[in-house]
Length: 357
Ligand SMILES: Cc1ncc(COP(=O)(O)O)c(C=O)c1O
Image (cartoon, rainbow, N blue to C red; front, side, top):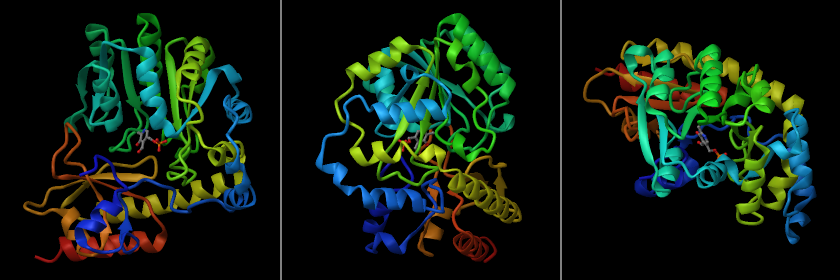
């Protein structure tokens, strides 16, 4: 079974149904889908795939640097943020890494493949699954070579306190610990990243971004990494496999971050739908829902002996079971924010399931 959401092909195969007939709430993708601008850019430039992309991705890197108000030497694009997680682990070659648990699975996979020891920092339910100052203490005591933290976190959708993040960045800078802040979902937050301003003066801070979620291009693949450590960015550019970002992604990536209409419409639409889901899910006495910040919601089902994923599959709705996240169990789930009609369908199905006896 896949460790990720969005595995509708696998689930559909098990149920002997077509993947299109499943309503997929398991992958956190902007429900508005591709912007018209991106669609027409792709259809009118299909011929770019007849050539190799620029091996240095000059235009793409320039556009990403400009949008993030940094130098081109401080940014590298990747085949999704995932490529950069693996590339960064290879480049940093850490012996001990600290991970916040529960969290995104690929950090651990990349670290373990590299033979790195993983130190878990557990986020527990009593503390609302949020890190606090004890994290700073743990970093001081355990002295990892690197630390991954996702803001907002996946699967919880929670944002740590901005002040804690600033203190964490300062501490890691002082102790020379690489701090990888995964901002894969930061574009869903209208105010963006609170750490971006620190980038230029930091040598140990890395901001990891994904463009696949907000811009609904998980199949095209595109992400990028920002760091004030130019030598490290150069090392990453020099050592990776050539042409890993395809020509269409490279083209589209030059325009995504300027697509203000799509960005504004998405923020408004998702905020409205997220509020609807948050309120509707919170009405169920058997669900404990955490307040979302991005485009997905995390909740716990306290009703005994019920598998909500299986029950919803009978309605052809796929949600993310969180039982395979270290630190969680079969009572926890995650759902994406989808379109108005789809969100209503989910709530109707849950009403049938949770109020039937
Ligand atoms: C927290 C987090 N980081 C990174 C990624 C990888 O994103 P990409 O599609 O850009 O590889 C994901 C994908 O689900 C994610 O949830």
